[in-house]
Length: 396
Image: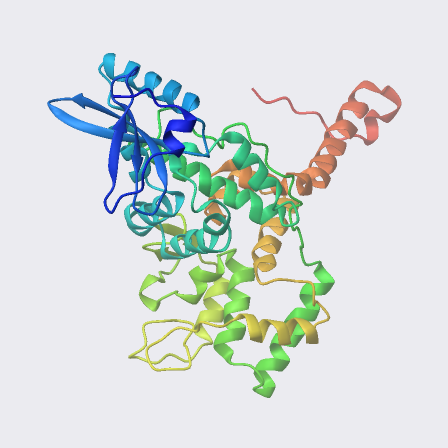
């Protein structure tokens, strides 16, 4: 066997079938000559009783000396009991981010999540993650890749943060499924963009205007009574839109709306006399289980957005979203002295931090209460005012 050199390799004869010429200095190191004239360096070794070959690189792309050094490195790995060919094949077979997205949907989203949540995950994957990261190997994604990807979405910070959260959940599951090493989630420490909470609450005057439009819409027949009732119930109960849209008569009790399922699981929502009055005003079709009846028999209304756009325009409230009706219920409760914990329970918040967005609305109520206590204290310690000051009562 000759020693492989650049000149020797370039002078090798092209034959009708491929053949291999091995190096005299490094056992197992050789060059494969193809009928097309292409020449590729490789290394051959035995492991586990089998002969394996590992491609190193094409002649011209790497030099003969570089290929020899790489062959010696791989043979050193074999001497340590490793199998470099199997490692490479395993890497080639390693799943990509596209595969992780599909497994996430099949084994997590469709099994453990609400249908709307699963749908939102699918949209994030199809619109953002797959186009940018889809062909990356799962194990190759680094924190710098995630940081760069997240930054590329800076124009839509809310969407960027939701996508980052979805990626983080995916990589946690990738660790659970053995696709990445434990504690290697690349989303960790990637900072989220600041989000401006959309806080829009209706004032007393705006509520009056909206109520007048509701009455006119029903009187004129310009809107379905079911549609108007849906908006009224949102204001009177603080429910989520989906909870009112899919509300069934069977869920209604004299004091509560007993929902067997919702965004946060089963919910027991207080139903006031005013809410019951709205429910009592609705015509009821015996065969239809839904309160907010749809256009077709035995269905619920699936489009409350278009009617709302017409109603809010007539009321001069074009910046108000349907979800702001729920915000208005919460803000009215807080501003009238109801504590945040109770408000959170009424709204069905599972995280107290979600309710804290209304904390600043309690400032005026707290200030008035503080003023009342201060007046009592001042009267007690100022002799000239005692005759006109309420008696201080100390309890406990």
